[in-house]
Amino acid sequence: MAGRKNSSAPDVITDKVSSLALAAVLLAVSPAARAGEENDTLAPWRSGVRVRPVSTVPGRHTIHSYFNTTPESPDGRWVLFFASTAADGQSGEVRILERATGREKVLARNVTAEDAHRVACQQWISRGRRVVFHDERNGEWMVVAVDVDSAQERILARDRQLGFGQPGSDLAPIYGMHWNPGAHRDFELVNVETGEIRTAVTADAVKAAHPEWIARQFGDKPISIFFPVLSPDLKRGFFKLATPAGGDARSTQASERKGLFCYDLEKSRFLCLHGKWGHPAWLPDSRTIIEVPNRLIDSDTGAERRIPDLPAFHGDHPSVSPDGRLFTTDTTLEKFGGTAKEWGVVVGDLRGKDYVILHRFDNSHGANSWRRSHPHPAFSPDGKRLYFNVSSEKWTQLHVAEAAGKSN
Image 1 (cartoon, rainbow, N blue to C red):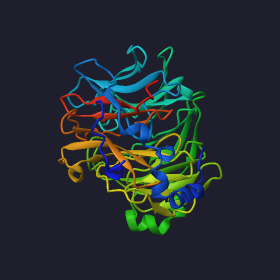
Image 2: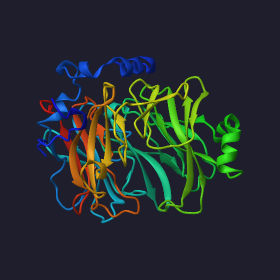
Image 3: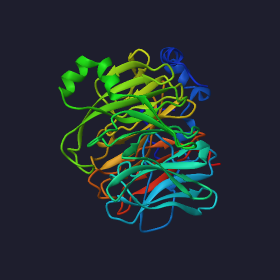
Image 4: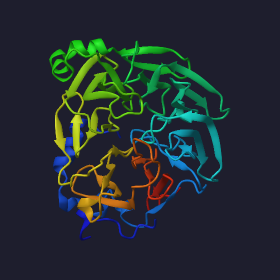
């Protein structure tokens, strides 16, 4: 199949692996072996892929929150999104849509988001029985859980925002507002079943573990932990640090944010530190992190390696399929025959060399938030579908791509 290395799918219809084992796969599999269909992990995504909006309801934005979480429920029944009729997409409703029927259910109304980039950080939790999100109410930020069946809500934490957890767990990572953390400077975990909040790691402990690096980066400025993300097995988390920079929640000067810190929650010990945070996401092995550009980081040692023979994707919010064989990301298309206004959604072989661009679109419209929505592609829990935002028209729309022969 010629051109496989840099194919762009023109006929689109509009387990666990240890870090060492993954390294062996990357080194051992030859290009010749990949040519065989039995080794062609991208075969379902090369042709016959169906791409469509998740919802057909007109006159509103429908936005998936982020690439660190999937909008599809663990059982595959529902799709979660933020719906907004506001031009900037920063206020609206948390909704779910039943995949089989298109029926929608409102879980929360009058939700105020920080921007249209991550909207309410809405995500599945409690094995799909609940959804958790954050909301600004009368100037106060809070983390809220809502029961899917009853739509009853529970305020879990005040003066906090929400990181990203795992849908099979009852634990949600939370932190103080990065522009004004007040007393809430630490990485905390809230149990959405019991309401208990416990400290996972303190900002003071981070400073004690990495004093020289923090002094170089932040001087004597106060720091807080920002944006924690839990590993699939819940035993680790990564986060960055923030210090207030004078702006408010909706300002590019809200805070200075630096570093990629990995922490072992089970053993209460610090792991690696990388100086720059790009767009990190966990692999299913709960040890390896995919990071821009095309890097895999061992969270135990900090060692990194390139996914070989891939172009640099600009924009680049990467995440990995549930089986650990594929990655997805988004990119502007200047290097792929398009313009800076055009974006594409990529699916690639985690062994390297091979990728396809599933869908191309003008992404210069949509919600006119101060911080724009990006595609943020993410796989479904079974790996058969891919969800991403498209801002090709007035309204940003959540889309789904279904791999050929995998629409169930």
